[in-house]
Image (spheres, rainbow, N blue to C red):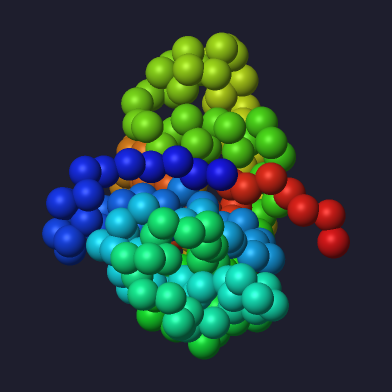
Length: 199
C-alpha cells in the first residue's frame, strides 16, 4: 500500500506528476511484482494521470483489465473503480511508469539482510562511523561487513569494483572508490537490496 497526496490543481503540472510517479517507482522497483492494483481516482485530472502512467481499468463486470470504460470520467470518479497492471500485461505498456515496476532482474550478489541494511544506510552517505551509529553497531563490524561485501562482489563480478592494487591511490582512496562504484551500481539495481525470495 502506498499513500500519497498533492493538491489537485498541481496534478496537471508535468513536473509534479513525474516527481510523484518517479518516487513511487523508485520506492517499489526491484521487487518481483505479480500485479499492482490501485483504488480509484478522485478527480478527472487524477484519473487522466493514472491512465497516462500506463495503468489499465479493472472492468466492474468481469474483472478483466481494459483500456476504456464506457462511463464518463466525471461519473466514474464518483463510483468505485480500480486501475492496475499485471506482469503479463506490462510488456504491452512499454515506456510507461507502470510497466517499469515490472522490470525485474534476479539479484546477483545475494547480500544477507544485515548487509542490505548496511548498504541502505550507506546510501545516506557519511563515514563508516556514521553508518555504525545509524545501525547501532561498532565501526569494526561495519568494516568487516564492507570486506565481506567486497569479496562477494569481486568474486562474482571483478569488473564492478576496482581491485586493491589499482594505481597509486592510498587504501583510503581505493576504499572510497569501491564504495562509490558499488553504491552507484545498487542505485540502478534495487533488486540487490530487496528481501530474498525463495525459488
